[in-house]
Length: 434
Figure 1 (cartoon, rainbow, N blue to C red):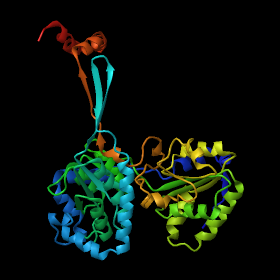
Figure 2 (figure 1 turned 60 degrees about the horizontal axis):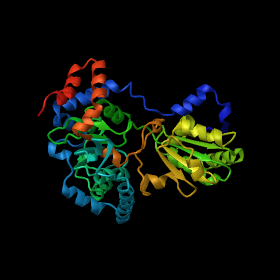
Figure 3 (figure 1 turned 30 degrees about the horizontal axis):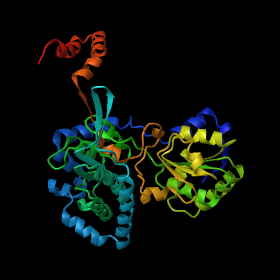
Figure 4 (figure 1 turned 30 degrees about the vertical axis):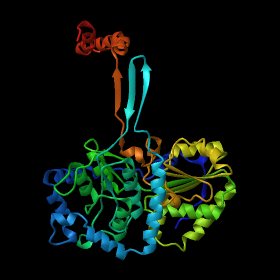
């Protein structure tokens, strides 16, 4: 392993700075055509395409194998450690409570001017699909994070789809989490096939209004291809975190938080930005020393070499400017007054304040959502919330007096845009009696 060393922000070259900012942003151009063909195949052949994609897991496979049964869920509870079931229920309770606080008014209206009443409604989507990564690992926490906000929002049907394993099995912890979260159906279809199945619908998979949840670049590519046919959440890439610290930070804890972030994936990114050169040196020593005894070294080394940095800033202004430009998925603020620093943060997916708010707390159980924008997408996207499952149609009621007040304005604008019938539709209400 090449030892990690502190670097000064001001001494980074333009190329180095660009590489840090871009980190592991997903480039799907090389796989776009491959994924597009899968999406087209599912759209045209439906269940048959999904069954063909899962033949490796079961020799004789039928459409009924694509959906988890109540008996499978009951068996899953017997396979999962009771401690994990308890943890899932506790996490679900906090996630549900936090997202219930996001629910807004069903309807509001104002009198824009005399005779003109305008307002907005709150309406949940009818059907939502949640993609849950699987295969080599299980992510029951992602089930909670995607399903619970949808149920809180009032979505009528919330389903998940996740990759199958040998014998068309699904991780017992995923099945239990789906039950705890109140999921309505569980489908065993992974990758682009699962995304396309939810986007277009098959005899077995329902057509949904929106697809949410993280996945690999093939899943991301499929979501972007079907966007417009369905809504999606923000494009998601490998996990990332930025730690913003002054000289009050604990170097051992920061080093552990840094390493925790990059154990996700070879393309994960961790960045420390601190105003203290002493702290930066201490953190680097702790990282280099602790790395030697850690598992998953190939993943850690790739992340350290490619996308991770320990950076020093001249002052907190420079550090905060860097953090806002980086727009991290996760932002840890370890300063003497983290709430004062928070006031200056413009772009971040989820923010963790103080030494006792490590990122894993939000990943699992503090209540906030861990489905977050990556790759600088926090500049324009937010983390998953109740709002993602809500439509907000507007309405207006105009009296004759209200329309009279707008008559000249609407007619003038309509004629200027070459739409005479728009003008006539208003004029007609004043030239003929009902």
